[in-house]
Length: 363
Image 1 (cartoon, rainbow, N blue to C red):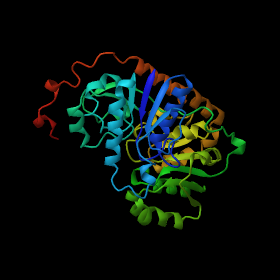
Image 2: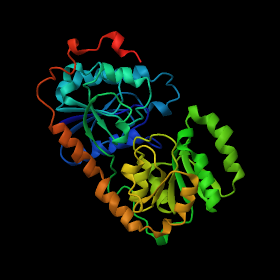
Image 3: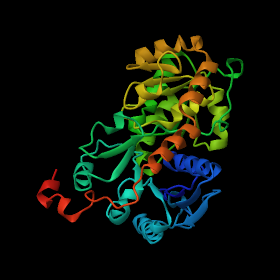
Image 4: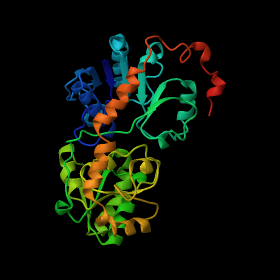
């Protein structure tokens, strides 16, 4: 098949450091190429891929000191995609919603994976206006806040099987790991409290976005300084994850929001490291309680789960990753979706007569 992958421009594919969506797009793209498909990746110019790269910006926008507004760069990308749309059997968008008006004439050959949260009130009028845009969720829980839309699949994320090496218990260290992003909804303060109450060291590897800088300065940095068992190691790259996660006793995932997926959970599982996760959002779909970790709801339960963490078989954690969360399974699911695309334009999805009246789009 001739397949286009359209990635966000915030990070390169794969990202140099943090960047969950761009990382998944990279995994999908490279596996499709390995399977013999003709793939074009629309992404930043510093992306690295075996596919054809159609560069839509010189470099990842987040890392460019010259980028003030990302919107013009994204409009350039959409124009490139529109001009080349006739070349592809399937166009797979990973950029949320900005492409919806552009793809009206070829929506029957598109799919949009929604990678983010969908419980924001501003999204409801948008999806009321585009109810037939073909969508894929990354967990069933992600769908719950949405109005009626055109779900054509649910595809859990996957990782390359050999990306992160398995670490047996004899090689794991005594520390707890927190990996991802410093933000109120990720609750690094909970991770610090859990580690302190359990009497265990905690290593935090996380990026700090500008929007979360005040939260770090006012809330988390003082906690790190106040707890000698806590170490902030900064933002780490892909090549550092295996050793960071693999050497941990457990990954703490103490979220306080409806997490759409949580890529770090399956990264930890790939290393054989069990996860202690608060049961919000996708967590019950990703974690097999008592096998790959423990699902908890309070700090007390998390501390109690740490007392049982040594009872879990790290080889069984890795085995469950291989069964459920490899890139081969993820791409197989997506190829099945691409294969179901019709050759003819959708007759109703984007017809002008089917568009809601303006008054219907109000909140």
